[in-house]
Length: 248
Image (cartoon, rainbow, N blue to C red; front, top):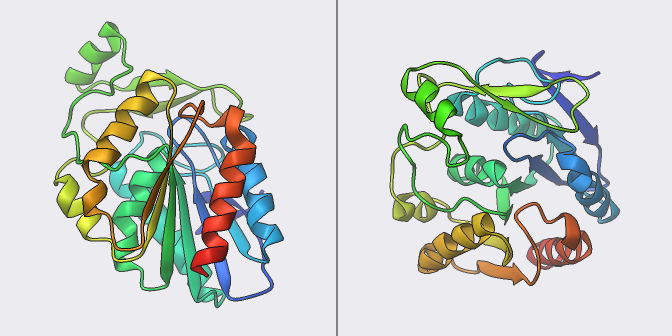
């Protein structure tokens, strides 16, 4: 097992040039993303790019207990620092769901980031301390009592659940969509599906803010794709690698 800064579990494949991709996973997931990031890492590596995948703090094999939004940003920053130290002068952020929210917030401060690829993207404003929308009534009550809420996960070899608590900052709890998208100066590829309530809501949020995206950005909707994109990996891989080839 390999750790970045002694706390973040990661996988790294070196590239043949000066470009590296950082893959940032979604909520209740890890650096494999249920196999999706295995596929995307392979596709990016075929282009000759280095690929770095991390488990966010509190997820997968990384250290950490309660999920903390500030720590997630620090995790991504540490990963990009690592790519800096290895001499990768062109960096791509690929974020899925929660990972997209991290990518949007860290990109403005990283001059070596040349483009973002966001799948199942969270392109809207912060939600304050509101409970997660998928909480049960009992979990919502515990949230407002400032208690730990345990959310079960599947497919992890080391964790049975992740933990959230209202007393720990939510990622991007404040700010507007205009502020969030307006801070990014590099082109963004946003990919959504059109199937399932969750993804339809997220796609509508992105559409409402499409005019705020940086010049050269693009929004693509994959017919039949859900938020997880499991059934659309071929299309997802083709769209993302085509974008990267064009932008680089």
